[in-house]
Image 1 (cartoon, rainbow over the protein chains, first blue to last red):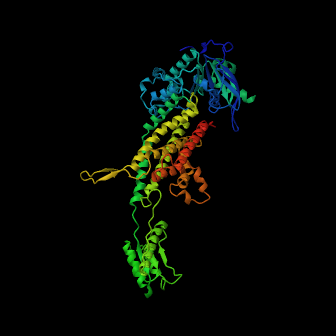
Image 2 (image 1 turned 120 degrees about the horizontal axis):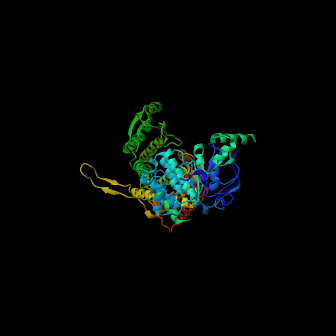
Image 3 (image 1 turned 90 degrees about the horizontal axis):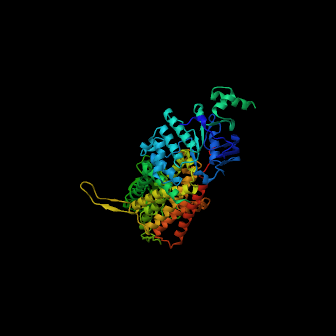
Length: 252
Length: 380
């Protein structure tokens, strides 16, 4: 596993894989996402960090083209979303497991592979090995434990080897040991050139990301590596840092 | 549309349903039990017993009372006499009689004489049966009293035979309704699970098109609808005699309902109807957030069709205000088409059946388009 702070990619020299430009999404009176703009480059893991209801999931749905922005636009791999052709290069792990509970583990993975036009059983087996479910292929997904379901959900998002990966709360319900393995795998994918966006409300996971985006009330209130953000907030604790930025934002 | 993706969707839908045994039972066994029950009720329903009380004490009435009594007894009724209407009413109230016939105190042949028939009143349709029995007996009594013989009426029809069992008329409607009902419920609930379980969100993030999802569902559920309709048709039309074995008496399997036309043609009608029900289920799942709400659509979507499309009441007997609703309901065309095949023996050369098939196909296509347009719904 690579050291988290060692990613050498400089944002200025690399073409961004994801661009957000003035993204706004309102649901009636609620501003779920309020004027968000950023560039995210390949080879890095980005953490969207914020409390529940801060707009992380809506932001991911805007970036994946699952919902249309009220204003602004999102680009993934130079395509304005939603763009069907780009979808085969995007992996999306939803917050809910999004697996078919009546089907077996292998059937789930094979089905999602087939939606991407992949009929290669070896690819399916490979991804099940990654999430440590290779020996549970014939198990009905509905009988899996919460953590195993989460792993299957991840496998279904990875089965087509995407270059841009959106993971909405991927480690919820996963035991600490497997969590370490998950992050090691995310790092491997990033090192191979993938752009990874992980949302979380768990601050202790945040340091595994190359860069963090603090999200509050639909806005990105701060951006930087964990160390940078702590330093700027003058605290040794990310949670305190988040609160400091949130306080500054509210005062502004 | 990508055939391989549709194939993957079909396989998935089929696998899911195949493993869901309660749903399979609902789809395959429930219609068979219910059609069997309806047929049993219609065929073996018992004729209500008539216990008549005649009130008619005037000497002039004696011949007609005797003739009426004979006529009623001839039809299997019991007959008693009462001195007045109040006593007769008391007998009906205490349950010892089912109907009272109160004759006027004068010769029946005089003009503007009224015969009063008293029934219980708690069961209107049972009362109608009592009244019909009394009318028949009266007619017999009067004609024999005046020494005349009534001409007999013979009823024939252009299509089918009017006197065959009621199930011949009912079976087509039942087959159509059950296919529609169960396919709608299953698709609606399955698609709702797709929405609430997060798999639809995930599917939308793959290159799968909405039209491919509708096609996958239509073909997947279409397969089960095909099996269901084939089973149901075999059950309704077939009649296999099982000989007596040991202590078991001989019995027959299948309802043995007569069909004048081709079962294949009837099958085609139901299949088109069922395909429309798949898209309807997908479409209506847009408006439901829970499985209970899918059930709540039954009174809105299915019950009116049950009442207005000719299952129970002929479309021509509906009140004029609601009659125009019948031609916009898919079930109207399916039931008409099935009756055309079952009773008239219609084939593809018959215009009425052609119309039914075309309308059903258009409705199925219309809802397929609507379903694919509404698959995606922003979650608030």
